[in-house]
Length: 288
Length: 288
DNA sequence: CCAGCTGATACCCCACCGGTATCACCGGGT
DNA sequence: ACCCGGTGATACCGGTGGGGTATCAGCTGG
Image (cartoon, rainbow over all chains, first blue to last red; front, side, top):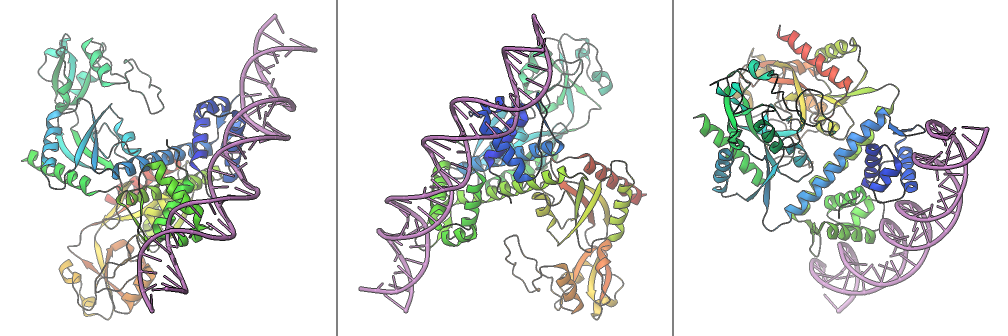
């Protein structure tokens, strides 16, 4: 009846991603025939056709699309199980906190210092990552907790507490006329012809269409701003990565940006609970 | 390096739940020696000791506790993958909606009727379940979407939209003196000596301590109220399961109960999106 | 001190996974 | 029209490893 093995899921994901048995087999370091057989057996056991073997190529059926998404979730959960278990076995338990490189140093330092003063505190490893990477790190267990920014990051599947709510600033090339202004509005910054908004890759690594440059990291973005090719709007506390060639101008009517502490739903440990408690206290201290 | 198979996870969960290799092997329909060997091999591959083989019995190490929780998540995710894929392959796609038996018929009927009128609508199977069971149904893929009640149901790991916010009523035995009142307060109902609050089982099937009767289903609870052994406070719209021997009295200062439509975070289908949209419209219509 | 229970070890067998060789089918190039 | 390159499917074979039986080893309690 049931009894899918993760091996079968890994095989299917490889084939579904390559849409080619031969290449998928290469990626899996195996020959093509056993892979074909394994996928056929998987389809028989599920009683569902996952792939359309059209001559000249393979394509996913709707059920195959569903199974691909679910299989990725399972494989990430397996990775998370291994990582979290190994870390739980260490003599020194630690929390891994993921944060975007360049996010507010002050806030993070305050959080870590306040946490370290607690009796239940464990060591915290700070894992710097690129924008939008936190979700994946939490899902596959490489991180236990992350600092994220609403409304930029989707919070689905995560629990979170707000730490700080603040206004946003536009980061502009110092040479641009708008850089001389003391404040700006969203209308003014959202459609500057010579500073189009940069485009980030989607989860499938393709880029949305648009006039802006394609970027994959914050450092690329900072470089592009310095070169006068784009602008961006970010929470005021994130301007830590401001360069000499950058100018930050408050955007008066930008939506308030909220910095949150987020962690995978359903996971609980005393060390994490203490960190969450610390974050709540910091939020109250900030409000006062 | 990696490459845990679900078989190994199933073995470990069985041993961790039975805390006894022989019984676990019986549950798995296999002999004890290969099970012992498989667990040892699992521990070697993880590089982590999961079990303490204290003579006369087995116990979980802290790392074992972590791995047990993670392994259960993985196995549920595998079940969900199979169920959702099989359903996605049906000619007639359907949504399975889980709701507590006896929750508001009117609201549900209104939701289903409004949804059926939409062009993207698919058939909806209503899966009646016991209180608190919705979360598990969503997690292992037996249901796609559920109707739940905040603040009674934990919403962690789920996305949700509110449908209805309403006051709560106390359900009392008709023969009890309090049943004659036209309204009550939380202070009055929370400590009635002869009507102690019923106790529900925890996830591990043990009961919290207390004077109230132990219950496992809504029908048991309804029976106990009719017998004059307990009382309960529920959202006003849930009184569909009121019996002739029951009396509903508004509790003026009870926290507002919110009925929500909830679904697993990260899952998306057009049919589900349309149902969510319908729920939002109903909420607005109710507010007006 | 023995009976009885626990999990661990020794050994064997065969199912199944993966490899090699080959086929069947199609499309596109002269 | 022909053949060639490339797809995935089929046939067959060998080795690994998962599972079975038999047995051991260590503790416990009567």
